Every structure is written in C-alpha cells, then in structure tokens.
Image 1: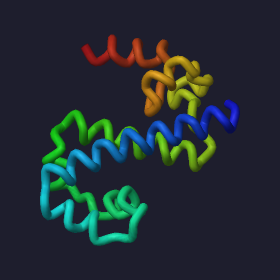
Image 2: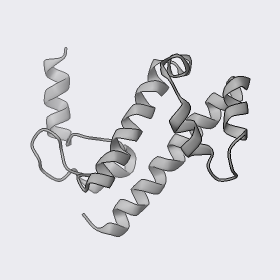
Image 3: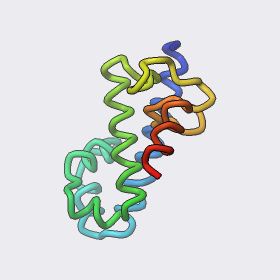
Length: 118
C-alpha cells in the first residue's frame, strides 16, 4: 500500500479520534480540565494517555468500540501492517478503508465472521 494513502488514512483516523475525544470533553467537565491543562496541540495525546475504563464507559459502547478500533488501526500503521486483513493476510481494498479506515478484515473475512456470529 502506498505511503501517501496510508498517511491520508492516518489523518482521517486522527480526525475521527479527535472528534470522539472532543465529544467526551464537551460532556465531562473533569476530562475537559485535563485536556485543557496540556500544551496547545497536545489535546489528543493527553486525552489518549488519561482515558481510563470509567471514561470509556461514559462514551457508550459504540463510541468506545470505535475509539479502540481507531487506536488499533493507528498501531497497525506504526507497525507497517495497516491495510492487511488480520485473518487471510490479503490487502484490504482501498475503497473499504476509505469508508471504514479502522477496518481490520477484508470484506470476505468480515462476512464469514458475521455469519459465524449469528
């Protein structure tokens, strides 16, 4: 996968993460104080370091899961494994990653997984 595409997806992931964290800070004044206490521009880094289980629960299950998937995708970028299906090890189509940048399975493996879990 090209470096330019991966950088584009990383920016998109960071933007989604910042949106979730901003929503959290808007909802929780204590968290907002922690975020605002950091240096300008460090908001996402500080927030990532201080989020604990209790705050993640307050996000709701869906946002919590999405935040975890975003963090996992960012880790895969750092490890050079972004865009590779964790099941079949094939490249995930760019179209899928553009619509779901934190996807970790190709469409076929995800479909099989969903059928198994019904």
